[in-house]
Length: 232
Ligand SMILES: Cc1cc2nc3c(=O)[nH]c(=O)nc-3n(C[C@H](O)[C@H](O)[C@H](O)COP(=O)(O)O)c2cc1C
Image (tube, rainbow, N blue to C red; front, side, top):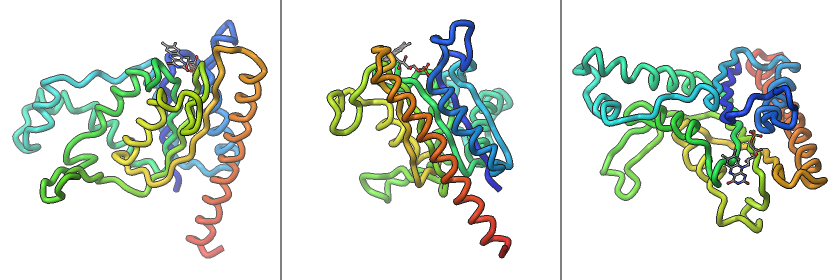
């Protein structure tokens, strides 16, 4: 059983009347998922376009509801947490998570941060114990694999790149991913969109190619796992 949770975060659609407006991150994710689907390894597919349908921002009432003991929550508090409960259930169900995100202002879109804020929740996705000393937070989910797909207008966001110190998208996603229960991360990045030159085309071709290769590798891995599980 592979349950795939696919999160798209661009505010742009995958396809537009003017193709130059198409979301790059959504199209790379689409290629990755279609390649996986062709190999029939996805048993359940959960999709959220948080770019176009952003989750609500958390507020003081949300925090109040989270910190009220479950058995004492009012109906109104339960309603406030209903979206969070649903989003957490989707993460918990997933073996494989794909997050496709543009870089906005050197980090993630506010819409994607809103999704994480709804999910990273005490006693649901992490617990807190001061007996653990300086690191009191501990994730409660485990065993998941994450594919991070990004698109940026500029370039050089790798550790040794020319904009390494402005790279707040992938490092932030890596940090937060442990609260989704992620234990393995693959990353695919397309860069240079704003330059619209051959470097962009090359970067784009490479990202689509990586998406296909990774999906094929994961499909093979999943089939082998199934064969071992069923002894065939
Ligand atoms: C509001 C906004 C902010 C952006 N900020 C950055 C940025 O800080 N650094 C960068 O390299 N590109 C930036 N870009 C360019 C996008 O990352 C680029 O267009 C990317 O392809 C968008 O992803 P998408 O094609 O999936 O929509 C920004 C674009 C927008 C619309």
